Each structure stands twice: as C-alpha cells, then as structure tokens.
Length: 53
Image 1 (tube, rainbow, N blue to C red):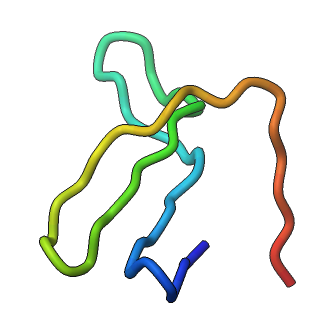
Image 2 (image 1 turned 45 degrees about the vertical axis):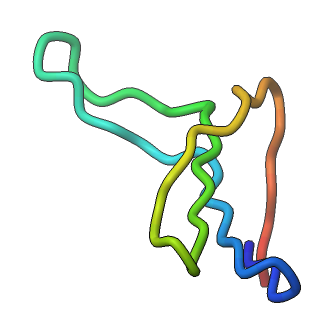
C-alpha cells in the first residue's frame, strides 16, 4: 500500500526463511520512508488479511 501524501510505502505480511525450522509467515508490517530511504518495523498484525485487485 502506498500513501502518496506522506511518501510512505507499507509492506504487510509475507514469508521469510528460517533455516532451522523452514519457511514461516510474517505478521509484521514494514514501513519505508521514500524521502529518507529508511525502513521501520511497524506493529505486529494478528488476524488481518488483505486483497488487492
């Protein structure tokens, strides 16, 4: 999701690879400030789903 007014990109969920336990789903939200090119971790998301189309 992109917020054009604040130059922010939100990346919600996804998968990451845990070499000891296999692949896991992520309940994190990452936030990119496009002006400073820095990432921050958002709050954990529980039970949220989204559809884009």
